[in-house]
Length: 112
Image (cartoon, rainbow, N blue to C red; front, side, top):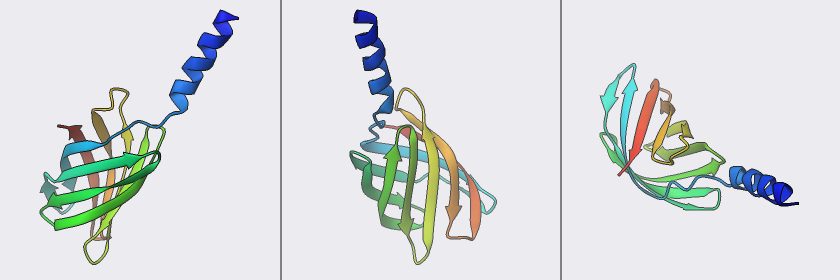
């Protein structure tokens, strides 16, 4: 019985989404250049909101976190979309980005 309870709890923990609330520094490398934007995220369940501040100005961010996967975007007259994976520590995100259809690249985000 105890083994069953432990197994159940371990499975239940893996179902919950990582919480990325906080300030993040990103390193973005695209075919059109690189940048180091800052993001401030607020997560409520799977819903993600926040702000972007970087070379493209400032903008409101919306997205989702499902398990260890995160997708978020902001609008600068066209959509900038990030899709990534949150590492097990919850302190790093890596993935791909599409900068308004004008450039694509990769990013690494580190929690501050």
